[in-house]
Image 1 (spheres, rainbow, N blue to C red):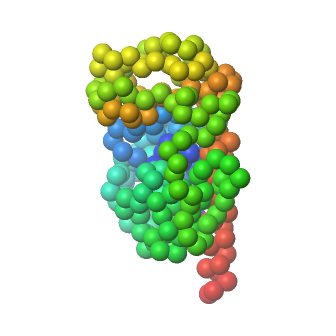
Image 2: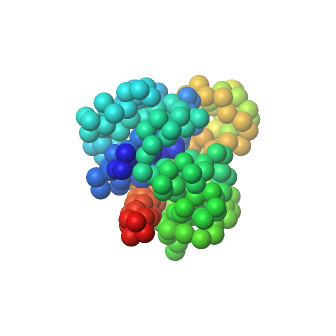
Image 3: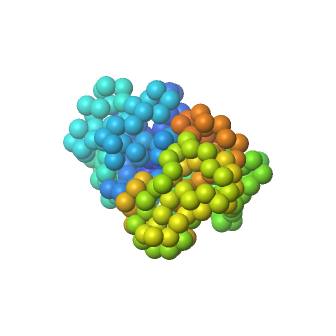
Length: 267
């Protein structure tokens, strides 16, 4: 399908990409794991895997079986399929595949998957395993389209928000089952217990609003990112697409249009 884009991953950044592409006239399918470990769940279509349907900024995504995706697309919605193997790519032969899993490495995406294959963030080499990469690191180059080489190396330090970097990230104190005490959109103070992993508390290191929090009952390893505190305390930010996601979405749109135009000019 010449206007179909399949996005691997349905987290908040992938949702920003899907929103930009859908609004620009593309049909979109998203893939996810059976148990997504998405933090910004209230701004991510991955939440449809748990709830059956998710709405972000008026756009509806629906958990869908592989054979039913075209019916959901015809309704003007985005199908989200549990498909870690990427079977949907071979079934529907899209114009473009976007790997937006943010795994920091390539875990199976190939340049032969579609006429246009795009990787988001580090772990890919443009011209080898993908046609283009969109920079995902906050800063001057965020959203830049790379057609040769690689994205910036992951530093392991989150981007600065409200004067804080790693302090605003909540991590699992041990391996175990995650259970939230607070919910996304709640305000927290330094020292507040936000959640538990088994019987170990997850403590807020900064004051702010809970912008992201893992889904209950998931098994997490020690030090896994399980939450995100935004010190700016703007409630609406918890439920809308971020500046970073919009920038990356714009880069993906540019990359698709550029390579589609290049392909047409070579015919």
